[in-house]
Amino acid sequence: MVSDNPNFGTLSEDKYAKYFNLLSNIFHLLLACYPDETVESYEAGLMPVYLGKLLFTVEMLRLKYTYGFSQTRSLWIDLTDSGFPNAQEINNIMQDLLGRKERLRLLPAKSILKQTLLDYMLKHYEESPELLRQLSEREYLSMLSEEKLFLSFTPGEIIRKQETKEQRSYVFSWACFDFQSNRPYIHLMTFDQDVSKQPLEERGITYQEFLDVVRAEGSRTPDVAILAFAIDDAVESIHPKIIKRLCIGPLYAGFLMEDQWKVEDEKQKVFREILCRYKRSENDFVLFMSDEIIFSKAQQVTRGILSPLGKVREVFAITETDPECFSRRASLINHNVLLPHWLLQNEGSSLSQTVSEFEKCRKITYDDRRRIEIHGI
Image 1: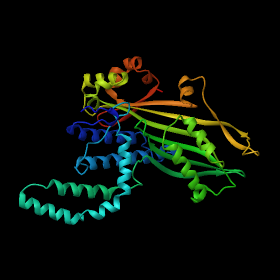
Image 2: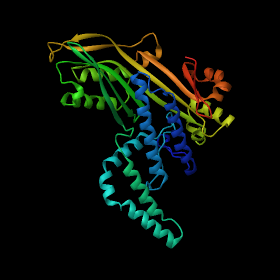
Image 3: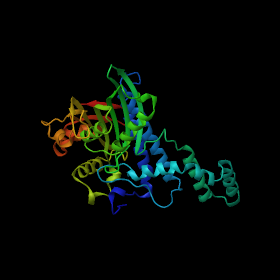
């Protein structure tokens, strides 16, 4: 079903089960890319946490839209250069979370609903759609948990690494679901804090100030250098050193593009034709991912009318010799693509010629048994 606005696209009812299964399979495969929990890497331990939150959020959307208590419309999906649910769906989950206690108070208890449903079935020899709707809504609201969800802004843990006479070093992570691109992003920031301020791990006033700034600046996805400048400028005692931002998407799957050919871009056209030509499995997909990195190369003191003593500011490295880094204001950009093994074998060389991004990607393939293999860069 083609929507007038493909950013708020919908599918025919028989395709939603496929779609939820597709998202679940994707995040399970991404989790398989981080199999070794013993690796001493903050990022290696971080990714399964956020991927687990994405997986849980998908299951909540499945419950919300599959069992009928969201009756006004179907799930919105961005069928342009995303493939994921529209960010408004993530915002709606947050609203459900905020109104959870009041709505649960108005719904009959689970035991009462089950008994009433049983009585109805014994009398009418069929299930009551309304009772099933209320039961599924209660189940959905009971399972909602902010700690488990991937929301518009999802903060992670703050970890103190070391301390000198002047500064403390920290690592902090957060995730966001961007309203413009309708894609999930995961951020990792290494930074210093002046020792004159209250330690952030004490979660006092200085931590709240820091979190408010990250929430304000990190709930959206400007160029990564602009993000770093904004955080550096907003809190005088905080000095970002490295920010790494991982973008998951866009996602291409054959059944998602079957009805969208009138609005597709060139990349969608290429993958629609390939996936439909081979028709190996309706669950086959191609998922692009990229990470942008910005790092500080020095510090400088800036002075002005309001700050005659000067403020310490980071000087971030933007790679001018790389056109993509320069245009996106980043120090380094890496590309990855997750795709079926058969597709890389049969179409790898032609994709490198027709999709410019494909050539510079590290290729991660999966097979029917969810086995992961990394190729190339």
